[in-house]
Image (cartoon, rainbow, N blue to C red; front, top):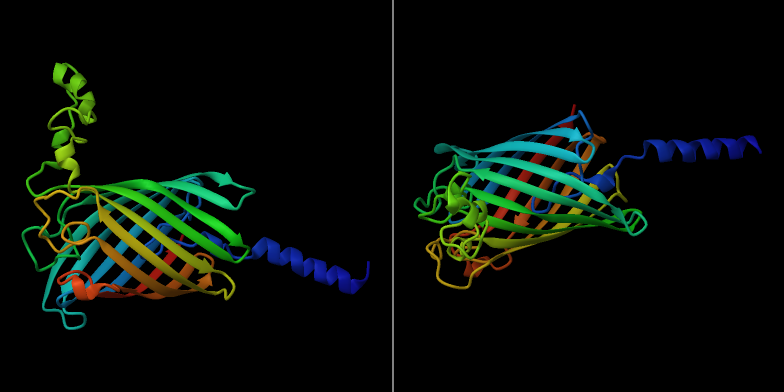
Length: 306
């Protein structure tokens, strides 16, 4: 073997060992990805977004994530809202989120990767049903979202991310956790299967409580061809479960008055594998027919691991 061949082989091995894992991209603005925080590692992230609805406002988000195991990660994040994108005229706390992601496995010759997502929105922000001031920035109601997410490796540098989630949303006059029954000494608890029997009245899965729920589907493509620059595009839609009249049907938010469709494009620059800075925009292509709803979002994000 010549010296030149040895040098080339060494370079190839080095690239294989140290090539950044851009195919494990962090969650995108509209799409969850297969990325998991490595075990015992911590992720800290920040987002600053300018929202255009019927006015301009800003949402600042800060979050902390933990790699419980290599296949299970937890995050918590909180929003802070401001009226006026640059000169702040009024500020309020937003909602609090707890998120968990479970990695299920690799399939189809390691080209398909599956996971499961669950998130609880804890309502610290203003109630969007009664107040218009922070609507579409905070909901101020409980939501529980869950469902599968996947990544498909089309080629070595092109990756397709997919989500299909179901969201339980608290209605206007509902007690979100009131549909559960935990007293095992009561016959009603067993009859209602702890609140999970949809045939019984006043259960968590009762038909009347499902009217405010909605499905979300998201699709994103990103590539590592230009690494350390990683561009991506996204599509996301939300559709209400029930077509019947609901008590939030007149509220101009996602999956209430409006079924939504949003598009996003962004670019991230990775200083190192564990540190990136990103910019993006989210646009509503049907904004003309959705007065009071999200027209556009312009965002800046930073993430790093410890």
